[in-house]
Image (tube, rainbow, N blue to C red; front, side, top):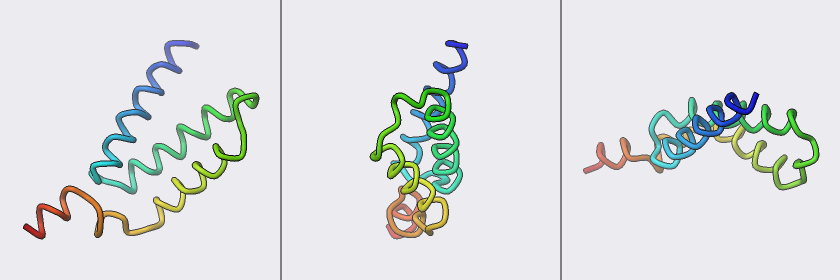
Length: 79
């Protein structure tokens, strides 16, 4: 339904902001991978190469230790 899409989009937007800030980055990246997958499977007309690349990069973020380098908690710990 349309309500589900709007809610899921808002959750994905919140996860993107939290990933940008570095708060629980692996969980946020995994949530973004699932959101992108859900949106791309729902409507194949919007899928192009850049969408697939973004989904792959988000999946790689799940595997990387990104919280150690560029995150607000790491910055606060170094201060």
